[in-house]
Length: 68
Image 1 (cartoon, rainbow, N blue to C red):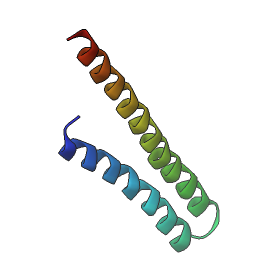
Image 2 (spheres, helix red, strand yellow):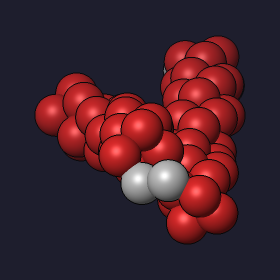
Image 3 (cartoon, rainbow, N blue to C red):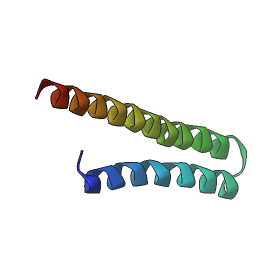
């Protein structure tokens, strides 16, 4: 994954987490809670998936180096 793509992907997930916190602070009641849970789950889930992708890609690179 290119460094620029990595920065954009992690940044977008971080923005979702921050947006969830802001929505929770600004919107009262059930709507704010639903937005908090939804946006934070998307952001944190995306970060987790990106970490697993990075681990998988590094293993692929190691295997490729071992073949050479």
